[in-house]
Image 1 (cartoon, rainbow, N blue to C red):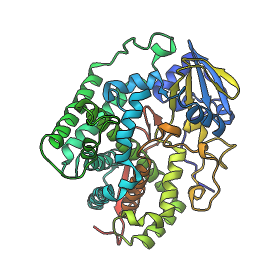
Image 2: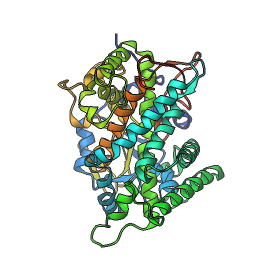
Image 3: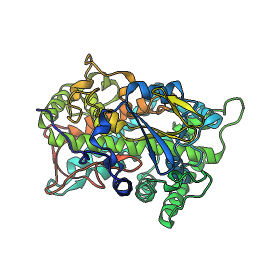
Length: 457
């Protein structure tokens, strides 16, 4: 029987409004009743805001592809949650500014850059694997935090250059984790239909976290642009690019905003995917054995490199199936800029339009045994549902610019780490997904590590 990873209990019917807000503050995965997983589209209203949930490949395509210009703006909740941190960065901008920034940023994370950026991934993963082999066998290690440190180190080396030390990376990681813990997940102001310009309160601790991130990133950017460092980095690439239609680069504030977008996209989401994959493999001995056999055949104990990717087919399938069950961003939200039409019904201006990978990826009509971990779904030659049934990196024009880099990073890191150690969950630990801005396996993931025989130190 396939392994069934944990998920929150599902209500038989939609919870009442008061309970809905209580659940949303804890983890908004819990608000979805059992019946919602089976619906093509859901039209509902919460307080004074119409909400449309697209839950079929056809309705996803209608909203995020065919009517992108109408449904391109991120929801008020996402914009107000992220704007203090990202300013007008790609995650929250729209219209002409979004198009301008994307044309500058997209090329620096394009698949053609993998050969340039992959050595930093292999190097950082090998360093982490060596540290894990030295870790005392009986001492629990927070693997979620470890994956945060690893992916932060990788993204800092690729964004800011490989000479960057770990101290700055860890400062940003800690501050972002604190910000995500504190930020409002519900945006009652928007659901009440109040004006978008009305300020949302941001607590003192959240403001301090933002200030710490901005200070570190501003300093690192200045070191690259003013300090004469010429090593390859994404910031260096962006500095050499021109704003479309001009002969000038982006200004310093834009550099900072887009650097934080890249950091958040390349650090938090990949860290969560790796933590989930390592947890699942610790519980699913059949998949773990298959993965170890592939890694032994392909790598033989050495770190994974870019040229190994075509032969790491099961490793990649593990990563893709992990993202199906635990999509890094479990809710993709938009606000209608004008009236539109979904599933034959009019969607009014101002409505919230959601694509919920958490629902879509577990829909029985699209996936056999949808809650089970079955990596074979993603092996070469396996039949897959239509294009818009699997959207871990979103879809349409706003699809993640770094999806190829993120997937390659996850595969290389998982391969390098998994062959170095054997992991098991620390006694007494229960794992349950928690969704805030991203989908995490709780607040920590304590695991016990034992060095694998034959892996490179």
